[in-house]
Length: 158
Image (tube, rainbow, N blue to C red; front, side, top):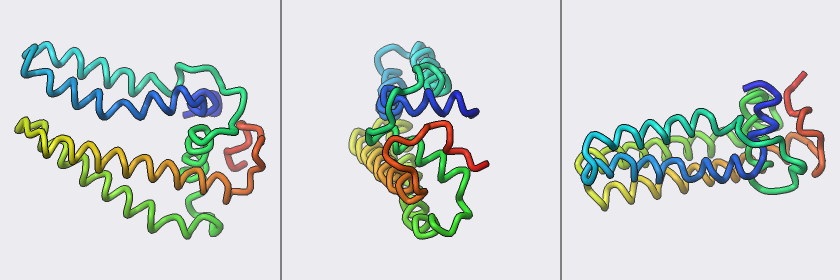
């Protein structure tokens, strides 16, 4: 994503609406029970929303909120992974990513066999792990040394 898309993605509406993607995707896949192959349209709509979402919202007026800091922390993490100030975050991010992937595996298995316990357990594990990673990104944002009201366009290391 370029600077303009990151600035729009930092809008809390963008971040919070993306939190809904996994539950919506699970519901779209599960809907095959009721609407058959028409469920592909719902799955496609969720996937299109996932792709379009970061650029759909206007740039946020303030980044003094948890979601904006999390999104910008992700940008910092992706750009500055080798920075020694951030190295202590790597082990927990790896562990949470693996937990999230495991949850996603359970979710997919549950959706394949239409198991409510597998689906909900996988969804919970994947979402809770992702939210914990997002919380870690807020911490990374702070560790990168940005003051509370920093200019959102300065997150790219230049």
